[in-house]
Length: 452
Image (cartoon, helix red, strand yellow):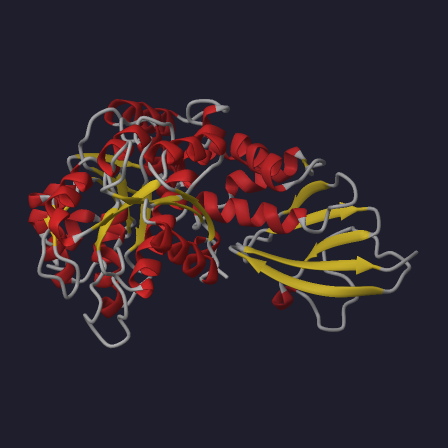
């Protein structure tokens, strides 16, 4: 059962029979349901418990649905509200959506249709709550905790983040893979006026063209085979917040045109839809390609580039700022090394600074994660054995009691040799199992010993 189907639902409906039917059917679909006979009772329930979705009849005694909607939206972190209306009050329901209701259903409606709308509303609130929880966690840390650096290049990037974040300008982040473009996008969102709303991200290179359009813009029921119910796209889910489009230069040409129009008009059509959907989003995009070259070769529209490149932040690769490796490695080990993170010797730092790190910070982190996995029992030391000039691969030597990591570039050693040439690590007198890892430019053999 999905998280959205364990959502907490409150039904505010004055007709007792309908209220009971809604409760039983929604519970049958796996939801946790409470009921209230009018708006005042619904408000009391909201004071007592946390609710994800409020189903609210418009015509109720004491307090009608419109007034209840207004009162609900005065609360911190309110539930999503779906209005239930008769045919004669459709205009009122539309007005309710302008006041912040998520959707409305016109009576009579099917339980299947109700389940779809409730599930979508619960998913939207889950995203909003997750964003709120993340912001609260980050607020307890420093302003930009992920921007660990001492280099002038990264200090300039942090300055640019602080400069552009308060505005609503679209931002293009450029840099090689692994330089931290998504972290920059998250920091811009968190420091912006949209921080209380959703941060939605999409990797444009991760989907086939046939799936990417519906992922971005959503679709209506019956839009294609298998589209049994309406699905909201990421553009719509980002309404009021920030949409981060990673690897935007991989976006297919037809979708570039549709995205451009959506940015220009702040409207779009769902796949198979005939009604315009209005959105208010901030676009942050990123690419690891040279933007001039993608315009020159015709793979990316220049007019779309001008729209998304209202402000540019370029992140330098790690090899051009080796002074950041020491603080980054220490920071990363605190996060991946558990309560007893490994220590790093000066020799290891020297080797890390001399290595090119083609995968940048991501590769550095992955390398440290793999070293940590063989050093859980006590704090070990990282040391590095330098390769000969003929072999540029770096090897990491991890020593921990009876667990030894030694270089294993097989082409350097005789297949009959019991230990790698040139390394003075004593082979323990014990049974051992050999594991070979290749991480980025590092080739390592781990000898896990069973006893001395």
